[in-house]
Image 1: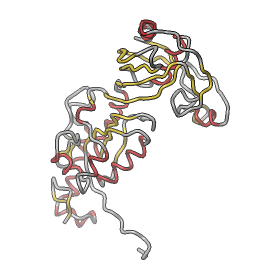
Image 2: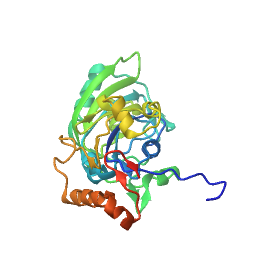
Image 3: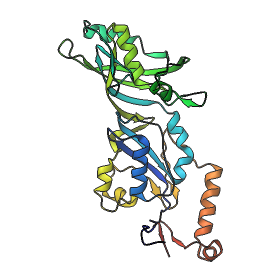
Image 4: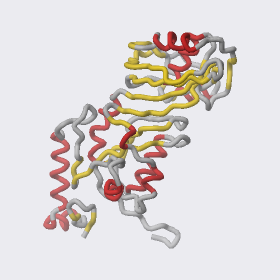
Length: 300
């Protein structure tokens, strides 16, 4: 190691799920990288992308928990969103440029009637500004180049869609809550509602409040993790129940709800056994690894 190189920070094994309350302005991947650095974990992944404009629940899986992260990806999601009537944008949200402006002449009753049309199974055409790929190229790259490609409609399910706030004609902003299946674009939903109302709309706020059986109630912010001092998972857990990292030795303490399997898979059991084998004092020299103190994440 040269004088200009920083010493490499050792990573540690940690298995569990962190319920992160992602802030606005940060991509899901950036939030994952920051949490991974704060917790000093070797392996981590997020379970569903939130745009930088969006905030809210972003479950992060550490270690063995990444093996069942697909369950969270497939789970239904719940959002609270605010759409602004009268303006359509290039991206369908506040980050895009206005392309169409219309007068807003509808009232609350009309909004409730329009929303009712989108409950149940609906067909959505994915937006151009999305990560879906066409011929191996993300759609947003075509959109940034000024190109529009044909997209097939996709079936999604709106399990619940309720109006939360509407003060028309005083304000063009309408807030609603939606619980939907995987693959639903809430900004596309807002645009489609705006078209039914005849004035257009775009999304100005999006906050995810639920993923499957998981909610924001036990979520923790990045600032709260930093405020704990070292940022280590066990200290965050000890600081309060809101930090939802569930760890027990080298195994994940699996939550018994719809989002997680009740029992570990055979692959997980083999992995746990292999890890315990490497940790024993007799095998430490054989594998060229320092012996780890069980349940502490320390080495000797």
